[in-house]
Length: 414
Image 1 (tube, rainbow, N blue to C red):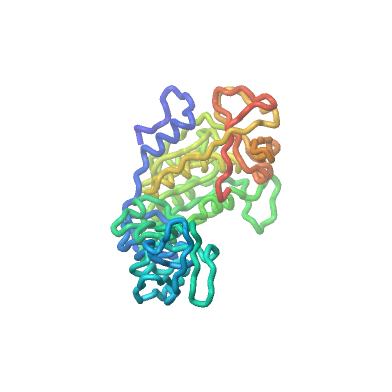
Image 2 (image 1 turned 90 degrees about the vertical axis):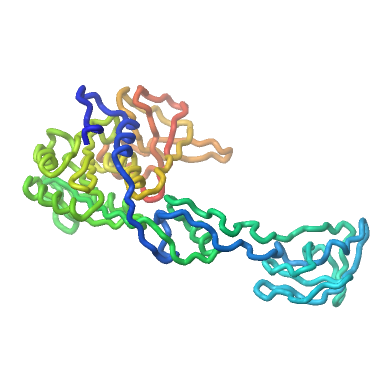
């Protein structure tokens, strides 16, 4: 871990420096498994997939109408053809057209030999089996060619893609029912601190309920993760070391909250030093300056701050990208938008801030953002009202009313 250790000059790392160091250190898992398509949503594709068939397999009609041969068209004149049959989706017409004939055809139905054009049913007039075509009838229209969506042996999806609902539909359309995916990541988390009380128990004097574990459980709710809650670890070095050593043998990644700052709880640092290679960093970010990152055996470790909003911010900025790389998928780019700020924002230069805001759009399409409330890192109620981060660069020393700011809309799960 020496290549990503805390700088010897004790300067704070920038957000970008910390993100780069973490991602450079982590390697993706290699193990994979074969699973049924319905269980593949959200999983990471382990191998590139190619189509075994063309889609559609044959030419088919793009609409309900009448199929005919373009040789029947008389330039600038109406003409009449006799209907001799129908082609339905799943029940193709198997006959042959002779001169002066056409067929009824429905959307998705296979286009039979001899038919190279389809006209919409609204454009023709019907009298028993006689179909009158208008003078402006066009040739070669409304037919979907075989392979116009997917060609046989075409690359469908590249390895490393996180499978979406649309991807599942695409794979089903070519008949793939078993999908090779990366195995799920095994993740565990726990909270540290004598002040924490589990839900269901009465608060003692000076105690607070542990909210971080429930927030983390929500943030880690993903089909690609197998997640275990290890509970609350009290301020006891022996118990913490035992927890770390045991967990490192069972999980790919371990997350703790509280005790991430050197000096705040010396037993935490000593325990981590005894169990693995973990660095304590100071990062130029607010909220969430302290962060511990490293390895315990073969298990990656993140020590996040104790304040709940700092847990949210450091998870999103550091843990989430690390999990994506570890899982073998692409690290997603965070969506950033420009919005006009409806508040004056206080800030001192030095740290990049992620203030919690409420983003709205006017009827004219302009994006406006305002503070969701107080910005202290314990104010989870304000974060609950927010729908975005207002991102203020490290060198920013405040924002005036009406200035443009960068916002990051909350992703699903926050």
